[in-house]
Image (cartoon, rainbow, N blue to C red; front, side):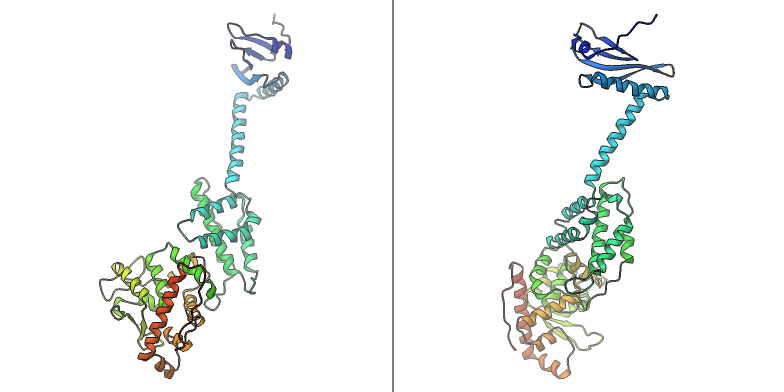
Length: 422
């Protein structure tokens, strides 16, 4: 005859005292409290499934009340009746809970905004603060309010395309389209996706920005886009901090010190320079067959001496070759790309325009400036301002300009300087 089990009540459980050995207080249906010699009271449940005995643990009393234990017993009995091992069901439930918690934590760490902020930090020391802060500011304006809190894996390519297209169709304060900024944001966003994939090998996400950028409205380059003269101090500071290749950086400085075209700088060989008399005899161009003599300021001479160990050794060697192969010219896009990485929407030719504007703003004779920059004028004007006397004036002008540029490396603002009216 089966032993009669009287259901438990809280008082009986509370009054149960520890003994020399563990003992059990049964509630029925396989549920019981196991009282240990140390006085702890643990909920257990015996069961059988497919002819095999099993044991469940429901926790410690009173953390798990009598009523809660009975509820767990009934849930387990339903699973047993359905042929499910409650132990395996419990493990699965715990696994799912851990996955949910991990997913929640993962989502919090992998929102678009969190990854973009990590990208901003990762760029420290690899690019200028001006450039990386500009990137962050544009994210804050255009992307964080819309997709910042979304997990990066939940962002649809169509959603990104619509955002960038909307930006491209806007106009800035000057009434110009923002297609350039839309494409720049798309490039930066591609870097966010690249970083996410690198940090989480399980992502293996497609980077939608690689395709999106091909279908954004074409950026109509303004007439040799350039910065304003008032932005020159920021540009000089960014150039000083630029971590790119020394040859690219030196080529930009040479353009600033001389005002010469990128093409002239890219094809210049060491035989074109006479450092003893500080002259660069620029090779004739397709539209101008005359050899143009360029006065070199002291800073340009120092720059050339610094890079001579890298590219010198033979008079026919290129002074500013490709950073990948000394026998090849520097890429046409190299200077412009470096300027863009520094955070400025300007072409290399635009930088030449800044030199022209700067020399004129500082009061130098406009005709002298035009001859120095190699702008084609009438033969009479060219001859008049390219003679020996005005060459000396050009040398003086470019030396004062180079000194002015060097001052900007450490100065926070432009100190007005007037040129010579020669």
